[in-house]
Amino acid sequence: MIVYVLENNIIISVAEGRINMMSLEEYIVKRKKQDKVNEFDITKKTKNMARCVRYVLDYFEQDIDPKKNDLELAKRKSIIAKSQVLKEYDPEVGKWVVDIYEEYGVRLDWAASKIIKNDHLCLLWYRVEDMRSCVEQFINKNKTKVNPLIEQEKQVMMLFRELIKKELLNVDRPSADLGKYLLDWVDSTLSKYGVNIEWFAFKMALEVYYSGLKYEYDLFFQESVRVKEYDVTKEKENLFDIDNLYEQVRHYPFFEGKKTELEMLMVHSKLDLKENAEHKAFWDKYAKEKLGDLWEETNG
Image 1: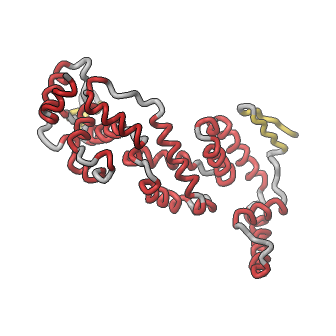
Image 2: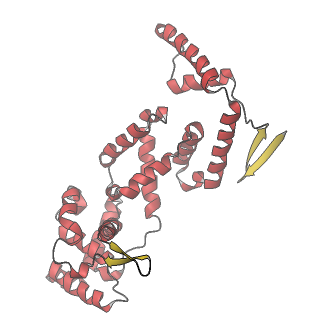
Image 3: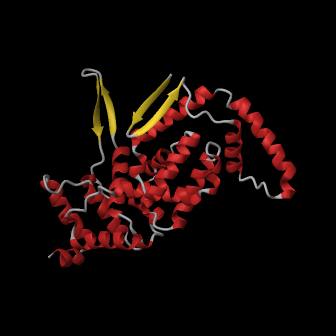
C-alpha cells in the first residue's frame, strides 16, 4: 500500500512504512562523500578498502531497520515543509540548514538561536573576528552530531548573521524623545557598522530588570506576588550595572568613550515618557545632568 502525504506542496510517499529505501551502493557513496575519500590516490588504496568494509558493516549493523529510518526521514521532511525554513533565511543558508537537518536530524538554526538569546553581546558583532570564538565553540559542541560541521565555519557564520538580521527585522527606530545627539549616534553606528546599539541597550537593561525582580508567595491568595523590581528612577549610581557592562564592550569602536551614552540608552529603554509624567521629569533632569550643555544645544 502506498500513501502520499502533501505537506506545503511537498509530496512524501510512504510504502508499507518505507520511503526511498537506501541501497548498499547508495549508502557507500554517501559515506565516501562524507569522509571525502579520494579513490584515485593509490597510496591510500589499503586504507580506502578498509573504509569500504567498515561502511558495509555499518550498513547492516546500524541501518538494518529501514522502516524506522525512512519514517524518521519522512518526519523530518514534514517538519521542514511546515517550518518554511527555506523562506526564513538567505537561500544558501536555508538550503544548508535543511540539508543538515534531513541528513542528521539536527536543527542548527534552533541551536544557534539559543546562543543569541542568552548572549546579547552577539548583537554587537560586525567583524569575523568578533564571531570566531563563539562559532568555534558552537562547532566543537555540535561536531559529534554533525560530522562535516568542522569544515563548515563559513556556513555557521552566515547562519549567525542571518539570525541576528532576523531578530532586528521588526525593531522600531528609537523615539524622538531620545534626543538628537543620541539618535545621531544610534543612526551613524547602524549605518557604519550594521549594529543596532539601541536594541542592544534595551536587551541588556531588560536582563538587569528581570534579575532584580523578587517574588514572595501569598498563602492567603495562593499566588506569587511581586515585592521588588528594578526602578531606575530610584537608583543612585551604577545604573543597570553599567560599570561591568562597559568593561565588556569598551573595545568596540562605537562604544569608545561612550559609557555615559550607553547608560542613557539603557535608562531610556525602561522609561515611559509618553504616559508617565514622573518618568518624563526624571529623564529631562537626568539627561541634562549627564550631557550638560550638549543636551541643551542638540535639543533646543
